[in-house]
Length: 238
Image: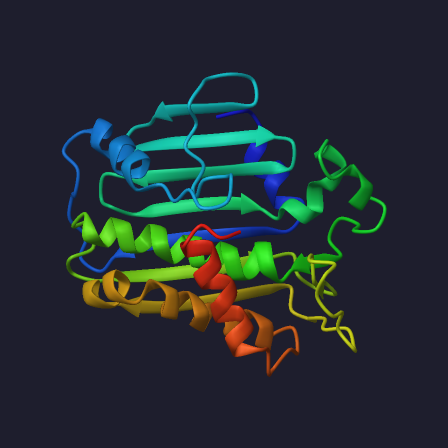
């Protein structure tokens, strides 16, 4: 992995996503299987996959085996992430908030002056779409037989204190009041059965979406709009 990438990610806002099997057994006999399970189940719904699976090696991205895991990483434009899939079936992912790195994004530099690092959280791309992708990926892993005994899911958003919700779509009505959190970290932790993650990934994602918004003081978000955004993402209509 690129030296100091994880430290760079942790300097600003980032997600830490962790899937842990409820029974500690070895799921993969070879490291190649760790790589293959991620590649086969990566979610590609909006132009950037989740988790990002590197297709090349370079100074800004790579894919490599470790002692008992395979890992992938990228540090390109405002995409900064690092993941590992262990032979135990545990998956861990550090994912930088893209709105915190707009100064490195050649496509959205006009937003850099408006959206300062550590100030905002996009409600559509960084919450609704992101949570939906995470649980869709988890569902695919469950279908592949990785979490037959169930799974413990931890999704934590770090460096959130004084961060404010931001509506990225200029065509939508703005908030009438700011929604801001005083929490340094927001973390959702829950155990799910194999059946739950396979049959209800969209609903599980919605539960986390509401949990996150609640901690920003947005206690009554528009449920139908959120579910429509999820449907549009999953059906490729964005």
